[in-house]
Length: 84
Image (cartoon, rainbow, N blue to C red):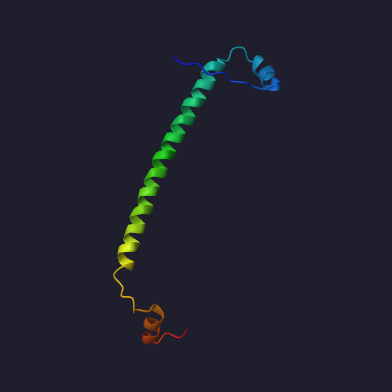
C-alpha cells in the first residue's frame, strides 16, 4: 500500500483535533475514492460526447458534399417567392 502526505493549515489541524473519535484517515480515503469515481464517470461522459460530436461532424460533412458548387440557397428562396 502506498502512502501520501497531506498538509493542512493550523486552523484546520486545530479543528480536526477537536474530533478525536473521527478516523480522519478513512474520511480522507473515502473522499479520494469518491473523487476518483466522479472523475472516471466524467471522463466516460466526455469521451461519449466527443464521439457524438465526431459523428455529427461526419454526417454534416457527408450532407454538405452532396450539393453542387453552383447551387445557391438565396437563389432557391427567391424561386419559392419568399420575400426577403
